[in-house]
Structures are given as C-alpha cells and as structure tokens.
Length: 429
Image (cartoon, rainbow, N blue to C red; front, side):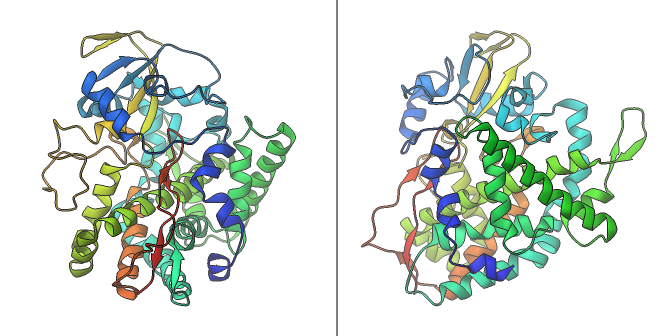
C-alpha cells in the first residue's frame, strides 16, 4: 500500500480539493460563513427557512432532495443538541429523499429507532476507542503515517492538505476494508461518481456504481473463502439481532452499504478536519508549541478544532410531529436544518466562543462537531487516532514547522457542508 500512498498521483489533487469536491456534486463554493451563522443565532435560535435562504446565499444549482418541504433552521446549542438526540421526532429518514444517499444502499445514516440501534450495535465494537488504538492504529495508521512522513522528509516545503491530510484517511479506511494498492483511489473515484446523478450522465453514474459493486464483491468473495484481520471479515462474522429475538448474518447488499458509507465518510471527513486543526495550530503558533511539548494536548486541540470549525456545519432532519421550539411552531413534515456551526459558537455554552483555544476547561459541555445522540459519528475514535498520530509524527520530524509566508493565504472553503482548507502550505523544519 505504501507505493500507492506515497505515489505522485494526480488523482489526489482531483479528489481532495474542497472547491472541486463541492462543484463536482453540483454545489457552489463559499468562504467563511461563521459570522453570518452567528448573527442568525443571535437574532433568534429558530427561524423559518433553510440555512441557505437565511444566509441570503444564491439558490443551489442542484438540490440534494427530490421534493420540496417547509423548511426551518435551529441555530443554538440547546436546540441542535435536542434535535440530534431525539431522533424519532427529528428523524434521519430525511436522507431517504436524497438520491445520492440512497445510492449508498441500506446505511445506518438514514435509520431510526430500533432498526438503527440493531444495525449500529452490531458494528460499533470495531470503532470504539480500544479498537481504534489497538487495531486501527496498530495495523494501519502508524505505518501509513510513517510512510507519508518519510516522503515529506525529502521536501523543504509541502502542501500538507495534499501530501498528508488527503492521503492518510483514504489509505487507512481502504486498507481496513481489504482493498490494496491502487484500489484505494480507484474505488473512491468510482464511489464519488456513483453519487453524482445531478451532474453526470446517468450512463456514467451507473458504470461507476457497477465498478464499486464489482470491487467490493471481489473482496467479500475472497474474505468468505479466507477471512483476514480486516473490516470486511469482521462484517462477515457479524450477526444482526432480529425483532423476534433471532439472529442472522448480513447479506452482501448490507455489507456493500457499510463499506460504501465507511469509505466515503472515513476518507473525507478526517481529511478536512485534520487540515482545519493543523491550520489552527500553525496560525496560533503558541498552541503548536504547547502540543509539541505536551502531547496530551493534541487530542484537546483536535476536539477544539471540531468545535471551532466543524467540517460539516449543517445537517438535516425530518420533523415527524408538529413541535414548538422556542416559541416557533414547526409543522410535521418540515425539513429541519441543524446549524452546528453556530451551535458550536454559542456564547451561552462557551466563553469567547469565536476563539480557538486548546486550553478550554474539560468540564464544559461537549461540542457538536462529531454529532450527538444515536447518530454520533461512528468512526470518530478512529478519526481522532489518525489525526493524533499524524500530528505527533509531524512534531517529531518537523518540530519547528511553520506556515509558508510566501504561499497564497489558505482559505476555509466549501459548500454549506463538507468544508475544509484550500491548502496548508508549510516550510518543513
């Protein structure tokens, strides 16, 4: 895997560019939306209209959902936290109305209640903290980080966005799935194209979907014949608890769905959030020095990055019953935008919320950057281990690394979702 991980492959620049990512899915690109989101929250925590409408952004070139619904937005911590936790009232079934998400198959992203609990409970043990440290980190993360750092040591300058942040997560998650060599990038290319029905000819979308199916089928068939120490083998060994108390193994379509979701989410979110964290540490250089001298501060730095600038600042839910939130009646059948970007800057929860500060008291309420409630990010512990090992490695090899003052100023860019740094240009020293 190391050759693919460190290869000079133009697909990294195509797949891991926040502007290209947003536009390839039919979206548009914005700079920092935080001031506007904060202003809306301070005006009122619940508003009629989508977040896009409330921010006075131009209509989306392509809509994520097939049908129109009444739209509302919640913006403070208390209401976003509630909407995330009460998943039967504020339902993840909203994603059933998204052709792109439907293309993933039977994924837990759009499940609720008992069904969601049974499907998530089955795979959760693969992603808990001990497994993140003793399985993911040991088997795949440490060696991949070392290979990337070896490559960086041949350079004087680097764009860490492409040379580290983009390469690491997609390598880890595809290795974990049993995909090898060049398959990591090839699979991600096809997976992304399979979800681009809004912007690509249907023939190209179907061809990409067939390639995704073929590649996963090959791995599943191989693991049925000879199990290995990887995620697909673990999925094949899982048994789903049934409503009648019985159990059954997952069928191929269910395994396909898990693999698609894990690779899509695991290869994208960590890339962007690692970049955001590194940029904040290097911009607030005293925090880079603090973490370098006390490695126990790296995880709080990552958590603060996800609070300060979550890569996905808005998520949607479907309101199942008419409900009143802070004096505003939201009818059943409405679509609800949860603006986590504004909620994570709520001054009712955090002191100086618009400041990145890795020394915030640990006892303060948890941020919403990784979600909350039943749909809290399944892979967050694996993601954090990737980021911790990467940042530790950079500090070991390049303790005095700084942002390159001669490079163009990095920007936070993206659509309303999937936001990240345009680049992280550094001088390696």
